[in-house]
Length: 212
Image (cartoon, rainbow, N blue to C red; front, side):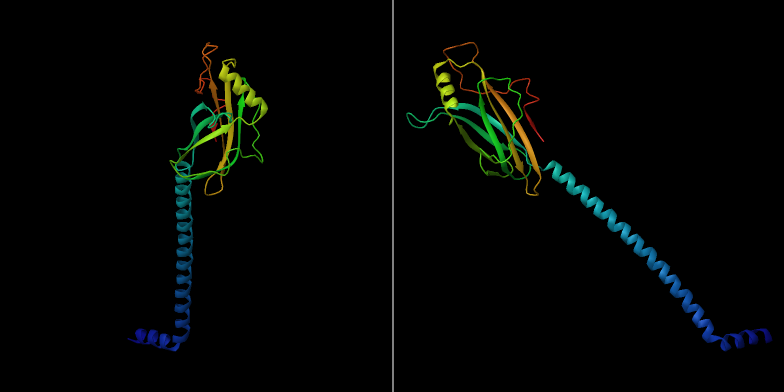
């Protein structure tokens, strides 16, 4: 009993000190727990952000715009004495909208021209916006004197194989710019006085036909 009494007397006599010690230990424990909880929350937030970023990047990669050129052919002038054109269909087969920022379209009387096409500051097509799956029927008129002479030669059957080349720079709604290029050839098939009106994609077109 004396031992119990001694312990009790010690406790009651040092209650303030013991209370401070217990409070300090509790505060330290809470601080450690809070620190660990904060670290875990921060790590979880970073992991969540990384997952969201990855999902967004994957979505953008699979839902990007994608321009293609189809149905390229010679078309006569709308009025007698007018200017002939090369007609084509511009299609956005991608998963998001895009806007044409720069473009250069060129008729060429040869089919092997390999000079790169510089589109800087030029937009022959104009600021066309295409939503996903949208398309435009467009024309490239033969406006220069050389092009008009070539058109006449084509109509008369004097023009050999020739091509329609171009490059288009387009942007998506996030401002990402991409470049596409194409080449279509109008073959004569050896028939001098029977001009073909259709441009087709040649089989060896890898260096001329791409979309970034």
